[in-house]
Length: 445
Image 1 (cartoon, rainbow, N blue to C red):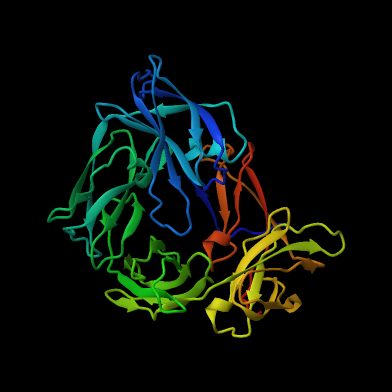
Image 2: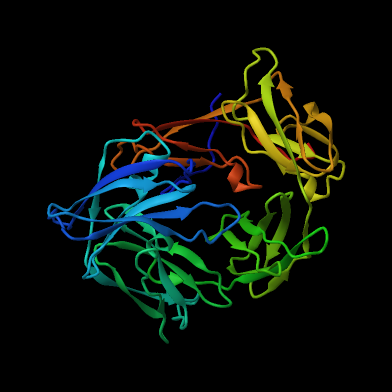
């Protein structure tokens, strides 16, 4: 049965799962827009980690090589040190800039079928990008911070956070009439801007001109453990109305405090997560011009539960099943624990609180089995199902020219509680993708 996909997001970047001992090689050629080779250019292999407990994920340079007379550059070995995003960035002495990202990002070497491909890096001269920021009435807004959020040359885009590993393009501040000038961006680049100003809702990757800003709100609070001690945690806010810049992430400070400003007025799901603790979910209402202070978030020590979902009749593992652990207190968000959808081996792993609970498929609450979770350690729980209710999401991704897009990343939004649980798949050479999913329900059934 095919699943009607309500929303899919094609991302330019993809987290890469790799072993610390992996080493890869790479080839590229550096050229000007007219195709002429650019010799003597430094090319940097940049890695941005993808660690779920660190929203900053600072990029770093893993290797550096110099292009030859014909513009070619060879990386004989790049150490794949961690999960994350990989890119090639070229920066010339006269500040010409180019990169390999988006469709050509190094993720194709480390995660999916490697290809004997020579990547093409087009460098462009530095230029100026100008625009204006206004309020809802159309009046210019002074003092707005504007920075390039992402840039693209020929459809090949890169995030400024990654680019900063090599060169730091300065942000601009609007003048009294709301005008700004971003200096140093490649003259051939298409630019999207990130804008922020105290008291207004921040906007991310905006291409409008003028850019319109509206009043926003903020949220603040603290995260502690059961002993009342501050804890390092990751805070995620997900807008329920899909407003502009509706997903925000931040790490707590050393005292456990956090504050997120520039939020568009809306209802948000707040997800608080820390290593070896149960994930906490709660709703937060954000109003324009106001700060919402949430009660202290108390994260409880978790016990890991693992198991395998098997089909009773075929005795084969079930792919795409999502497991929920539900305790007796349905009003306590800490009792609502979910595992990521199972892979082809049917294995799941989920954090939960000690005590009596029910465990089973999110979409089959009536079939969940009783389980006693120990106070510490691990517990293995095998799950057998007659019909897991798995659906198959299929589709095709094409470009504006109608041609299929190879290696596009598709995120299937089946779970709004935690975006990390949404399946991510890759299109094949024909632009086709397929993923097995379930429809998660409220844990109360």
